[in-house]
Length: 227
Image (cartoon, rainbow, N blue to C red; front, side, top):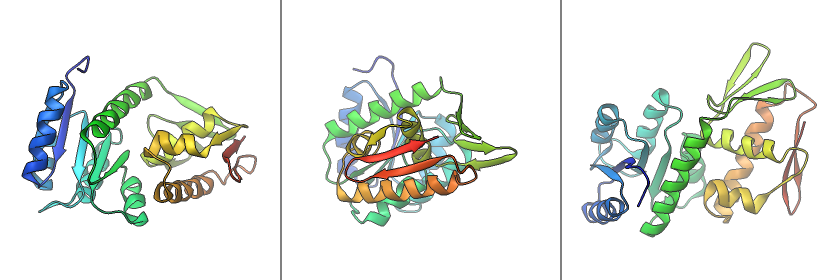
């Protein structure tokens, strides 16, 4: 059982899967808001203010990616897990780029979903204690997901902010590739590794105004933030 009754919004158009997940999550002490399409999910999100979203990508009226994009305009911090049958690298990258925190491919185990929900709720709570972090000439605001240098403010996606935070925690040392893939992506398979490479490239571009900062690829091991 969870210590407090967290509210989860679950958007899925398959009735059988909705029922299975409803029973499983409620048995673990979660309060679950179920929606059969993206339009209903958006209205429920607005009115009931859940703590975490589990969104099927392929839904009628409004798909999960579109819904997440709309919600991220209003709320940068609520955790989002995508569920999908898709397996192409681009779909994984797109999901994270839109602000997704995690990604489960169907079929998946209910136990795995519950573990990932609990991990994101715990991680989101710990973020509230983080303030500005100095990275060379930059100020990294983990909570607001921004990088600031002088008067220039750059927004980060959720995935970029989390990856940069782990790089910072291992600055001037190697951040193990397998560790961070399992920590942030859930596993270290080929698709997630490609996704991580994309995000490393994006972070390099967003930090390029300070030449003293480097993210170095340590072949066979991982990445090192030098600052």
